[in-house]
Each structure stands twice: as structure tokens, then as C-alpha cells.
Length: 463
Image 1 (cartoon, rainbow, N blue to C red):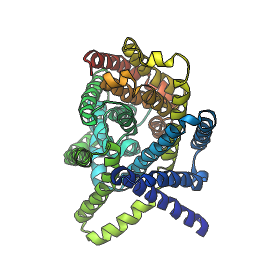
Image 2: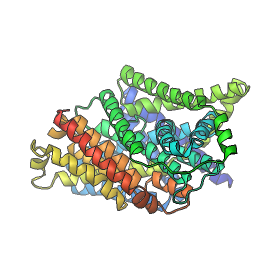
Image 3: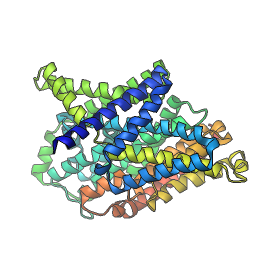
Image 4: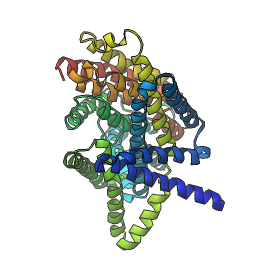
């Protein structure tokens, strides 16, 4: 890498720091100008990282610029709403960058590797359930980053990904468990979009309701998937029995601690879950590094120096995700403004008789559009902004929020362009549409059927 490239890389990472500080100052300190600084920092970051972005992220960035320009030129009276969407997009981008920070200690953690190793060495008839449940809770900390680790551990354990092999079922179990986590995780982007866009929604109450819904869907997932009929060699069975479940329990406890800390910050500081997560993740990451350094008999000062350098080096790792989701937020906001201006739209949005049909339509539309490679983020943002402050969002906020987060979870399992299917496909050595549209077809159909019952029951309950 040339000296110029290194300098530009350092500037890009510094812009992420600037973005994070500006978002926190605007959200907690109430500094209005900080929001505009965040917008400028994100825009400059995308420009500097342009060459490192994949084609799809570049395409969506251009689409976002066109969308903003179209609103400013064709609907100047809605300029304030578009500016608000730009500011909101910086918060989402910052959240993704901080999730990237958490990946640094996770990738280097022996504890995480041991937990994943325990999961992938279960008996074949228990492996799918173990990976579904374990992948679900581990992904609370690592999001899609847990999938490459699971894939690596499956290969190390001698697993294969051909049809009928336990390796494929374990990989799919981890993927599906991880996708269901997005229904309720306050560190997920879907949760962030829904809780910041739905009027009258109590985020803490929704967290527990969404968790219950996710557990129901997770149970259905495990009960409706037949275990692979295979036996491990005796030496592998003995090796598996020697592994301890304690690392997995410790990671689960860390997940619970992170959740409690996020809820406490949300309550004490009176900020959104997104902002609370942005604030807590770097602190949690540093604490994790210090604890593991102590176990490895490395001094705290050395661990801190090495850790901070490593964290700084990873600040731009989520460039693609941050750019993509920020752009999708702006495109969705622009589409919302144009759709809401269609004659007769207000009568649909304000109708109290069409509430449940609208929710059912949206729940089906999100994964269906995702299956044809329309980014689910745009659709979720669109629905959230169209109905979040409508009578439907005001009278049935919980039902609307569940529709969106469950729809999000189904979408990432079926979309050929989601990070979830792309990573799973890369691990299994197949095309992403095979994972989404073939391997996950039955799973998504069953989950959608159950989700329709959950959303309908929530709506009928009047919440």
C-alpha cells in the first residue's frame, strides 16, 4: 500500500470516529449542528472509500443522490423531511460501524471459537437444533460475523456441505437461527428502523414481545426440520465429549449483560436503542479485550494499546454495509414522499378497516420482493415511514413492528443479495440463490405461515 493510500485509509477511519462522536453529541448532547457534521462525515467517507465499495453499493449510493435531488427539485416543500432522513441515515451507518468494532475482539476470542466448536460437534440428530439455538444467541454479539466462524468450525470438524450431509444442515441451522435474531435484537438495523419510525411503540415492551415471537419461530424451525441420519466416527465422538459447554454459557451470559446494559442506557439517558448501542459497543469491546488479555497473562496497558490500534484498523471494515443501508434509507424515504402524494393514498393509510389486510400484505411483500433481489431495507424503510405515523401505527404499533422485523428476518433468509445468504453460500461453495430460493424455500414458507398467525393475533389483541 502506497503512502497516499495509507493516508487516505487513516482519514477514512478518522471520519468514522468523527461520525460516531457527532451522532452521540446530536443525540445525547442535543447539539443541532452535530447532525450536519455527521452527514458531511458520512458523505466524505463514502467518497474516500469509493474504490473499495462493491458495484451494488456504488449503484445504491448513486441512487440515493438521485433520490435526494429528485425530492429537492420536485418536492421542495418536503426538503426538511429529506434532510431528517439524511441525518437518520448517519445513525444507522454509525451503528453498523460500531458492530464492526465488536467483531475485532470476537474474531480473536478463544472463548468464541470454543463455543462454536462445541456447537458443531454435537451428535448429528442434535446438530441442527444446537446450531439454530446457539447461532441465534451468538449472533446477538456478532451478527452475520458468526456465520464464517461456524463454517470454519464445521470444516475443522470434518463436516461437508453436500446434500444429506450434517455439515449443510448445521450451516443452515446457524444461518436460520441468526436470521431470527434480527426480530428482536436492539443491535440490529431492522429493530433500529422500526423503533425509530413507529409512533406509540414502547421499545422495551416491543423487545420482550419480539423476543417471544422469535422464540416461537425458532422452536417451529427446530421442530419442522428432520435431523440428518448419520453417525460420527468414534474418535470424533470422543473428541466432542471432551469439549466443554462452559464457553457457550459464558458467551450467552455476555449477551445478556450487553442487553441489560443497553436497556439501562436507553432508560437512564432517554435515548433510542440505536444510540445506546452505539455508545455501549466500543466500551464493551475494550472490556472484552482486557478480560481476555488478563486470561492470557498480558498486561492491561499492552492489551489496551494493541486493542485500540486493532479497533481503529477495523473502523472502515463495514464500509459496504454502512454505505448500502444509508443509501437504502434515503431511497426509501424519497419513495415514501412520492407515494404519500398519490391521490387517494391518505384514505388508504388512514383507514381503520384495512389495518390487518395491510399488515398481511406487507408481511408477504417483504420476503417476496427480497426473493427477486429487491433490497429488503428499502421495502422495510418504505413501509415503516408510510404507516409508522398513520392510524395503523398509532393504534397497532406492536403488530406493525412485528410485521416489519419478522418480514426482515424472512427476507434475509431468502434474498440472493443479503449478506446472510451470500456468506452462507460462500461457506457451502454454492450460488447465493441456491441458498435463498432452494435450500430455504420450505423453511421460509413454514415461518411465514406461523408469522401470519403471530401478527394476526397481535393485531386482534389491539397492540
